[in-house]
Image (cartoon, rainbow, N blue to C red; front, side, top):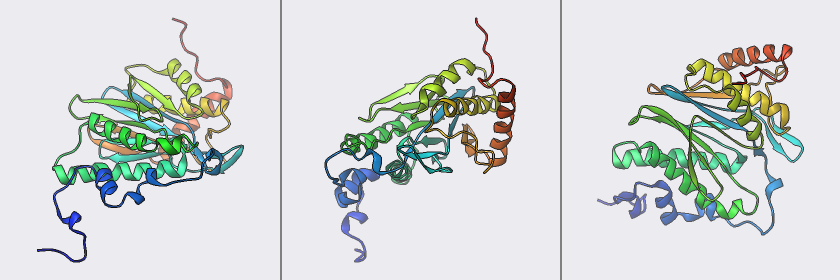
Length: 276
């Protein structure tokens, strides 16, 4: 029996990829199919900045600062850059904020669509590959300055470990070991994590390490926002384990941030690391 309210394509068995389905039925709705005038459009929209992720035994943590900038202007002080992708994974965004949020929503739908069609969830590698395909489709706009560079992390139910994946603007996918960072303050955040990271960190210590890394990024990169004590705006932190993904409450992150800031009052450059 046909339903006159829906086109026939919506009633037929189809691909497990929502992006492929949309490309076939309504390609104009895909962000990558839009045409924009030639030239560099990098300064036309707010940019998200620094995201960090670090693994610990039994899971992984991802955190992002809250600042979005347009050139030397702070466009937003409380933007969210880390989102759940599904029950066991999260994705953090850096680059053109509007396009990045749109890509995250498409990625969330892609994973949900696959689960409904196939009756099972994608593997961790499958999720990472699907995100790479979405980034690759945005290459045209990336070449005009509207790049999106996410960081993906989650708990692998098969291997029982937390895994982290980074990408380049062409959709190249790279699995990282232990920790990684993307965005304008990533070099400083990564340097901080090199000093603080240990493979046997507890979940709480891993959260403290990524907050320390974001503090160091904000200390040297004007596009990365530090803890805003006056407005009580703190990083967004997600912890993913075998029990699933959860976002720490603002009160929990504030407690960690307050402790980090208190330490910086006596040692502005942060905790000292051993020489050997």
